Image 1 (cartoon, rainbow, N blue to C red):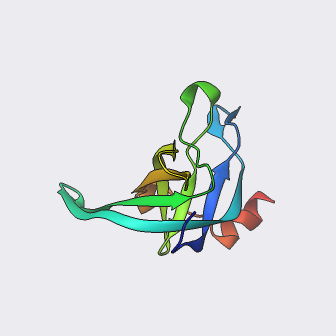
Image 2: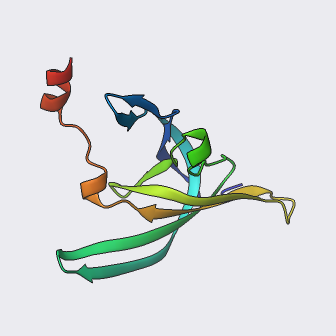
Length: 125
């Protein structure tokens, strides 16, 4: 369906498991085709400084998962322009012949989604 789509990395998490008292989940990164549009690009100023609060809307043929606490499943995440966005909503639009999935994503603050460095990964092996 996405006429102007491009390939993006979508991170899909597995089921959360409790290890040493903390929830953790494995994930896989997959390539998907989406038409991505920016909804808003605001700067929020708080006591600790400012941060971006960007929202995206995507259109595509691939179903995106949102968080389901009762199923211990985290939301899918989209890598866009070098930053990770968490899926907030996703629905199948069947109102035309071109049925497709419409999803919204919210920017994840860097402090909440740090990638492990190579040295940290070597220490755990």
